[in-house]
Length: 420
Ligand SMILES: Cc1ncc(COP(=O)(O)O)c(C=O)c1O
Image (cartoon, rainbow, N blue to C red):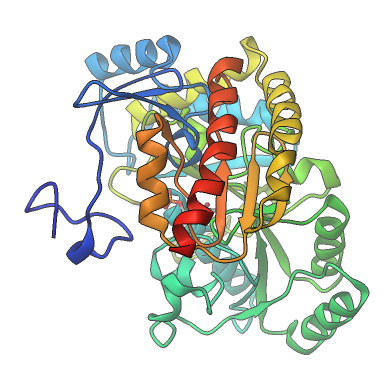
């Protein structure tokens, strides 16, 4: 055992065999400095959050000012400018039907709130039996219990908890005619019980970066609407430009009832997430009965410091050419990663926006691979059967090339190591 600190418990890690945890001391742009002064080029933008690069001065300044004025105040009973400003700012980014913003502390909680919103919507509409959810294979929506119930139930991380979470419907994304027919049948047989369908639009991220296109999303949305089932899009990973448009669902011109935002909402500076609803959802909670109010309120909800960071981040999307940068990254990934298709272990290479994925047959020697990347001066963190790049949108051409070149160098070395 080589735990870097005897009192710390690290995520998704078998602590008995934890043997390699680099210590970060500083970040800037797309670079992470370690305690031994080595610098890593970041290929994953801190779990896909740091879209403007680390320590963007506009975000740091906004947070410093807010820190002096009021780092936190409870939102139960108070309002404040950073949250009000953020609701106004987000409204300018989303289609005009999205007028209601519930700020929470993490993506998983935003998903929990979306589920509670959907269930309570139907309770308030006198349809209390509509409390089940339909989600999709390879989906991931967070680690809290409600969110886990709508993740892929066979996926390693959550299989253990199968019997402890509510049973939901989980089926294949309807990518072809047979699956479309199956999807329609499942809906037909369950529509009286279904509160909502939830999906990660265009890319299922933590389930292995599986792509589907905007027509599939539109098909699912149409069926949901036709059958009086709410439609929730979880944009926590895809939102804020990652797939090439500001929000992934925009491409299919659909109008989901609820949208979950998180991760890049604060530009990666601090945790904040949001459950966004249409007027129609919100209005179902407007009655003369207190018990019809939305029953949720985390202690740190709408934290002013986090809202200040998010306001600065949104401003950056307006003043700096983020979507253009995403297109440039996409081009570089398409041309740079194409050679990886020739490696024996690689079964697929795919790119969408500022996301490049190399899918391998089998992920052996994962720790060896992660360590080898660090030795080469890059932070790339493969998992399941994917090695992927999801850098900040501001990454320099030189640093992006270094990430790509390192992949091309290390994958054959790793294949050789796996054969030993
Ligand atoms: C699509 C999606 N939803 C929800 C979550 C959970 O967010 P958080 O880790 O902030 O709780 C994640 C995290 O990776 C995610 O990718």
